[in-house]
Every structure is written in structure tokens, then in C-alpha cells.
Image 1 (cartoon, rainbow, N blue to C red):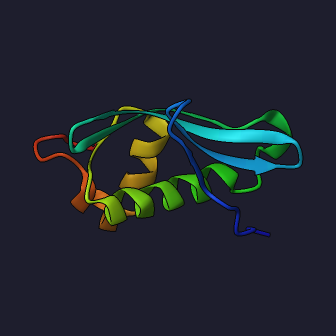
Image 2 (cartoon, rainbow, N blue to C red):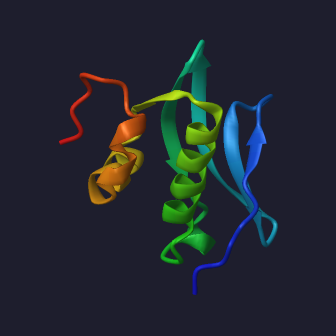
Length: 99
């Protein structure tokens, strides 16, 4: 059952977060001018297999779109998500090939 988690943009820690049952799922990022590099996705063991990471990526992509940023997906999980959901390719920096 996919829950609707609240996305937190923790700008100090440079990561997007979900706080679930006392643990944190996160996507780390680097922002440079109008670009955002998603570098690492991490979901605690106890949350694995529940669709948390996919939900997190989706909400982060929505936030990036809202902010008008250009995405550089350095994290393999994010790149794989975009490959499965090609409608998000519009956010990706031109010239980056998502294999």
C-alpha cells in the first residue's frame, strides 16, 4: 500500500527526506545555480520493498519541476526511475543520455 508521505527539503543537509516510523528515507543532492544533481537515494532496511524510494523520487521530481530546476540524475536509482517513467525526461539536462 503506497502511502502519501510528506516530502521535506532539508536544505541544510542538502537532501530531500521522508520521516517514516522514526527513520529517514532520503535523496541527497547538490544544487548549482539552476541545476540540481541527485547524487544518492537511501531507504532504511525496514522500509525496503514498500515503494518508498519510488514515491520519494516522484515527489522530488515534482518539486524540481515546480522550482524550474534542471536535473542531473547521478544516482542510478533516480536514472532507472526516469527510464521507467519517460515523462520526466523533460527535466533532465540536455545531452544526458538515460540508458
